[in-house]
Image 1: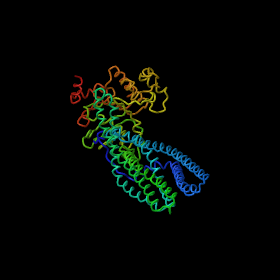
Image 2: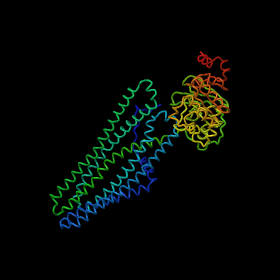
Image 3: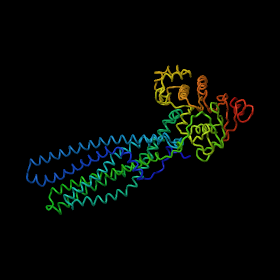
Image 4: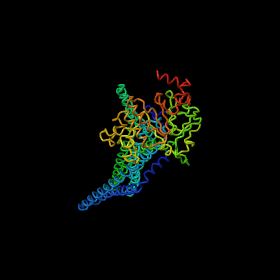
Length: 585
């Protein structure tokens, strides 16, 4: 099974115009704001292009004729134009900020929705830090670049066209100097772009590796501190940061080459205009025309300089965009059937010759046959890695079986709607997760259940006093994963949550391990209430936990090796008997 962690770069992607079209659909939802911004940007650019014309007129006429009132009037006109242009640009930017926020929100929502339905295998084989990058950081980056950079790039191209029109209307021959130089610069940038894209991919990968390692380190901080691994972790992060910085440096060097080359040729163009204009064309061409063309040349090179910089940013955006759509295009292996069976689940479960493998190589289950009757309690025992937890994951359909049939109330599990199936199942793990919300919210999981009903169930389980002893009772906000509670208290809250959800099938995976005997007895009393009249599957390493089940199944050699009651299995004196005697000793 290929695992993507902080030590492994992600597979390279290729640019696709199809993905660009898909991204544009997110923006065109807000075309009203975009069109208004676009229109205001064009008006602002055209207004600024009037200034060189005013300057040319002032030099060739107003100054020559010493018409000072007219000079003052023209200066005032320039100030008015600059003011209006700046005001329009501000409105344009404000509208784009609104679009940016909305598009970023839409992208994050689409990614989060996708993540909600991806199979467990995706999260097993992908670094959570890298997933976070795609679902949180990349949408912000792409939205900002597309909103500002792409919009400005389009406006720059239009501005460039207007500048050329104004230049040609002033003097064609002097205008051709800037245009010819710009042609060769464009070819240079196009030849450089594949390298820029390749370097950006590497930089993104190194940045994702850092995020992945930070995520892994935070999740494992207790292990780090327990084993005095802080110095080693710092060394690993330092190495990852060094690789990231080196990759970013190369990207910046190439990016800076774009604008530095365009700046050099900008000044070269301006010098050539002055040199050719004064040496070969003056006084046939007036001083005002030469200065106006030079001003237009500066305006001509300004969008070119921005376009070269924008091109680098758009290369960055394209790599972010590809990662986003790579996630959105992940296949939904676990999907709803087209015509789901309408089923009021009772809890009969049947495995018929079921085989399963996580990597299509090593079999975890091989021709498993197992029947679980509704309302009964069965215990699964066996060595670590025998497939006990896999059976639980298949019942919840976190994975699909490779062969055989898995039936719920006589219906193949693939033909049952996921919502129907999972709303009928509750799972309690060795360390059930608690959200950083109130105790009440953790118990009801956003269902509209009155506090009175919740407390009634908690009193039945004898944990109401425990909850009320907290600082704010049911309104107490839990820390991350309920870290302000003991392990036993977290498990008791998990049992109450199960009772409140009222499932037909209850799955307990090592629910009472790593807990002191006194708390374990309290949990066992609560579980006795919670499991009543429910199909219950218990996984345990300690046989004493499941010896009172209606049926015990020993999983060995990838199948149900032995099954029966505790007394029946002990009487056989087989593998179960030996396992029990080993634990009893």
